[in-house]
Image (cartoon, rainbow, N blue to C red; front, side, top):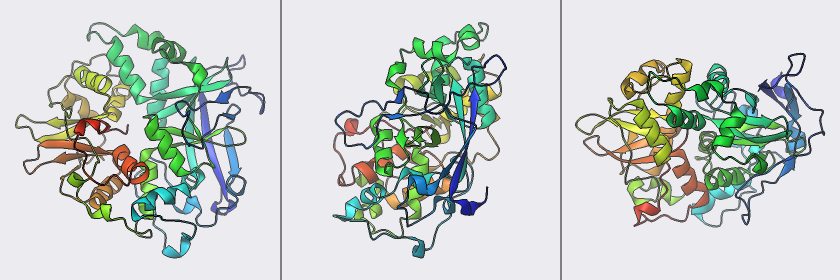
Length: 428
C-alpha cells in the first residue's frame, strides 16, 4: 500500500478452531454480541470503555481520517516504519512538523503528562503491522510454537463459543506452565502436549467473562499508560472504536520511543537533569539474581514467585555478567528443549541471537535524561543499576520510567521507604 493513502493495514492471522472446510471461522460483522471489558477501572478517569466488536478478518484498512479527523500535527507513518521489536530507532522529525500550541503546561513537571493527553493511541500505530490471534481451542504447545514462528511476544485470545476476546497469551503463560508441570528430564509434561488454551485458562482460574483489557484507538496515550500500569500488564491491544477489531498491541517500549522523539521540542522539566538516586524511580532493594550455573527451573520460579521479568546474572564475585529475561525462555520452545529445565542458565542462553549485545547498565548518579537515552537507543526493557565494582544495586524498567514521567511527575524527591516502590523491573 502506498504511504500517501492515509490508511493502516493490519495483517491478522487466526490460529485454532476450523470449520468443516478447514477454514478459520470469521463471524459476520456486527454479529458479535459480547464486549471488550477492561477490568480494574472502576472509579478511575480512564477513557477506555467496554466496546462492541466483531471477529477479526484477514486484513483491515482503516482510513486515518475516520479515527482521528482532527489530527494536524503528525502522520504516524513518518515516525515508525518498523514493528515494535524490529531493530532501529524511530525517525526524528524537524520541529516544523510539530504543533504544540494545544499543549497546556501548568508546571514544568507536568510537561510530558500533558503532552500524551493530547496524543491519540492511533498516532503511535505503525503503517503496517502483524497481529496474531489464537482461538482458545488451540493446543498450548502449538500456540507457543506459533508465537516463535511469527516473531511475536503475545496474542489476543478468541473464544469461539462466546464470540468474544477473553484475554492475552504471553510468554508469562509459557513460564507458568513450565514451572507448574515440570518434574524432571525423565518425565514428559503431558499437560503441555494435551492442554488447550481454554483448559490452561481454567487451571489458572481466569474468568473469561471479564474480557480483554483493551483501549480504543481514539483514546489518549495517557489513558494507555494508565491502563498498562494500573493493571500491571505489558501488552495493551488498541482497537477500532467502531468495529472493535484489534489494530495493534501497544507496549511501554513503543510509548517511550514515541515520547523520546519530542523530548527536545517540549519544555524540559528540571527532573530530567537530576540523578537517578534522587528520584523515586526503580527498585533498589531485594533484587532477584541468578548465577550462570543456576538451573533454568529455579529461574522460572523466580519469575513466577517474585513477579519480575528479568534476572541479572552475577559471577562468583557478585559482578553482573549477563541478564536472563522472560523473553529468553521462549527459546526453549524455539529449540524444543523445554523437557530439560535442569540445565544451567548459561547453557540456555547459548541459543541467543548473535545480535544480542549483552546486559546494559547504568549508575545511580546518572541523570534521568541519560537513562532514558540508554533505554531508547539500546531498545531494551530495563537497565541494571550497578556500583563502581559492577555489582547490582538496582533495576530500572520501562514501567518505572513511564510511571514517573506520566503518572507521578511531581514526586521528585526520593521516597524513604523503598518497599513502597513497585518491584517492577518489568517488560517482557
